Length: 212
Image (cartoon, rainbow, N blue to C red):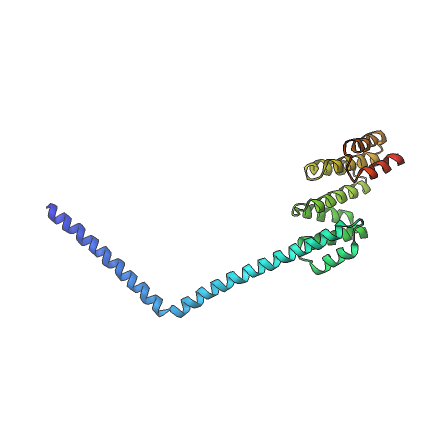
């Protein structure tokens, strides 16, 4: 009885092995039969992967180049709007191109509500701290011009961690100034002057103090 069971297991094992061998032979025959089609399919996959890699590399290269040109336009003492036009025109699809276009629209005084929406969209995408600061500044400026002082203050508080402390003090003082809170604004400007000896904003803060 034990011998019979062992033989039965051995036979089942042999049958399974034979089935596997048959499947392998069929698979091999199919490969031989459709080897050209399989080769073409493999080449198509490799070609598609190379095209995708090339497209992504080209896109990243354009983004870097556009970002470099935008940084150059913004690093000058006065923003170079000619360079902004160049970035906006040649690199429309890039993030830097969209940022350059937005800065030009702000300069031209386009619809402020539409500009605010575009600023929000770009703020969620940009990682450049300089550009982020410019966008935040313009968002606050637009709200001040619209006399939406509470909205301007909310923007400032929401973006506090995205901007330097001296910039925060300057913008906070500016909002207070336009709200008519003259003494509070003076206190903020004075704090900036006292606490940030190396800040480029000290001169502007002093100018505002002299006016107030």
